[in-house]
Every structure is written in C-alpha cells, then in structure tokens.
Image (cartoon, rainbow, N blue to C red; front, side, top):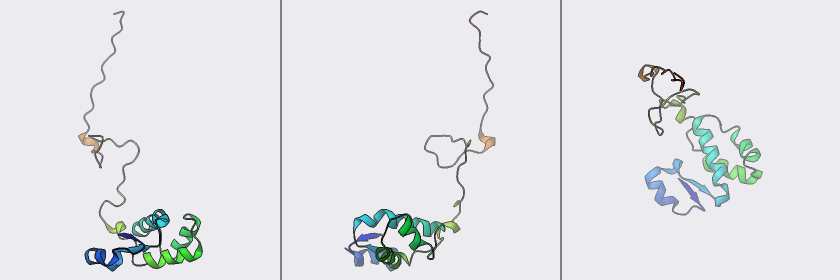
Length: 123
C-alpha cells in the first residue's frame, strides 16, 4: 500500500502490516517507488543498488532517494522469485487457444490442418 503523505497509514497497517505500507511525501514519487518495489520483489534490485537506481533512473535527489530507501527497506527482497511459474514466460512462436490466455498450449494440443491445394481458375 502506497500512502501519500502518510494519510490513513494506521488504518492500512491493520490489514497489511507495517512492512507493506509505504509512506511517500508526494505523488511525484509514485512511479520510481513502484519500479523500485517491483525490482526488489523480483530480485533484479537489492538494497545496495536500489538507491543508485533511484538517483539515476528515477532522477531523485540524494536526500529524497534516502527517504525512499528508508520507506521501502521492509520490502521482501526476491519474494516473487520463489513463487512457482516466476520465470515461465511465453517465448516467440508460442501459440494460445484464445487471445487472452495467460499460458501457451503444448505442442501436442495443436491440431495441424492439412494444407489445401489452391485451385487454379484455369483448371
């Protein structure tokens, strides 16, 4: 839960706990903080390189980046990496039954239609 200016922080802590409620000073920090949280939970960032990431990619000033680091220090690092299907991503050439399916179908499930010969208009 991202709480701008700490409003209703105590309320949300009842449901999510203190580690899962992050206080931000203003809404301009939402995008870089969300990116840092995603990076920490996916394991692409750690507490040693997140502050540099916030300064370079998020264009945050050193004081603000330290403030954000303090706020997100409780994020469980690499929590998503231990979940099943974390690295199971579709690759180029995968086929899906329906447009909105999340997972591709197995090769054995694909029915190949026999190619029809084109009829010439002269025969």
